[in-house]
Amino acid sequence: MAKRKSLLKNFYPKYTFEKVEDIPYELIKRDGIKLILMDMDNTLIDNRKEYSKNLKKWIKDISLKA
Image 1: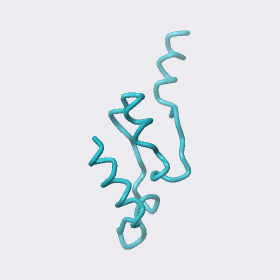
Image 2 (image 1 turned 90 degrees about the vertical axis):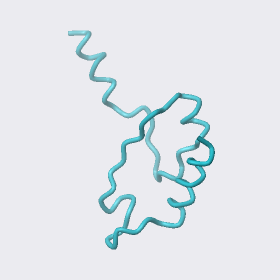
Image 3 (image 1 turned 135 degrees about the vertical axis):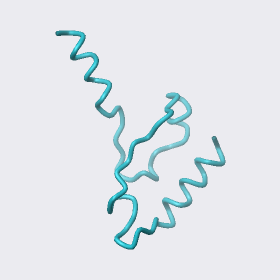
């Protein structure tokens, strides 16, 4: 049963942030993070399916650094 517990821990988040824009690129690079799962529905986009200016800037900044 110990193997099952260790396997399940891989499905829990290591980090949580109040806003996606708070995720520092340095953390992504340092930890070798390859994937960030996010809920889009009314979390990252509004009811009109638009991104905030801060989120657009964060995505652009992360893309330029990668």
